[in-house]
Length: 256
Ligand code: NDP
Image 1 (tube, protein in one colour):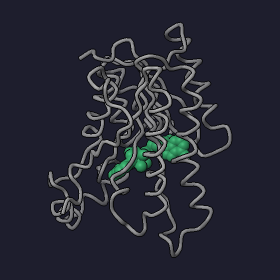
Image 2 (cartoon, helix red, strand yellow):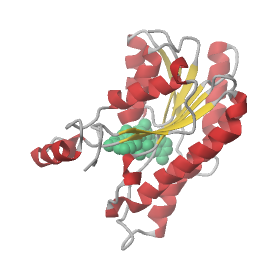
Image 3 (cartoon, helix red, strand yellow):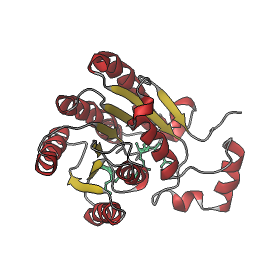
Image 4 (cartoon, protein in one colour):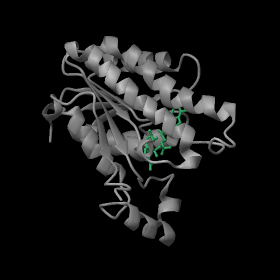
């Protein structure tokens, strides 16, 4: 379809996993997509090549998040590319997807260094990406943050990570209220267990399959395409009246 024809999108962490699924879907729907990533050039090239082979439009943007000046670097690069490709620097859709989950453990063993890094990549970067992207956005704009279903359960080893995703929900509600007058919506999509190149080894084990069948209403692990479908809806015209929400996209995790 061409629901997003003429629209531009930036997806952080768009070269692999869920982000790649989102990039492919937004491009298939007609958007010109900035595929942001940290360092794996081959994966970013493969994502852009796949989109172009399917008739879509995309370009890579390399920049590490979680370091000083990160958001500025990303937005300046995207602005320059958009100007070169479309003649203007208008960004319609920002998807804050990149995040890390590396942890030293929960409350007993988490180190201050790992804690700070989680918040720098998962919270500080999206906060300042929104701040720097807003001047490029206008009426009909969409900010979509990727949260996590772990905010509503207690997984001890995921504590600091879950806290970063709770912060994303607060960021979503506040910014939505502040910029609604500009016709921009802000929502969070919270995935549950999702099979990516990084998590496949875990979810493909028979024990994991059994565990998933017991804890998921839909009795399977999600795919990047499952999450991308929800993001595409939020990016498109039919979601114009949705803002300040955290959309549970877990496939019904831990409902009891
Ligand atoms: P992946 O780890 O597979 O995504 C990696 C992507 O993020 C790559 O593009 C990578 O670039 C980029 N990236 C990683 N770290 C950085 C960094 N410091 N700076 C810039 N880019 C970075 O993630 P998933 O697809 O698993 O997760 C995507 C989102 O979904 C995250 O917000 C995650 O918290 C959330 N989520 C995931 C779940 C799951 O089961 N997978 C469940 C619930 C939520 P490069 O390859 O170049 O390093």
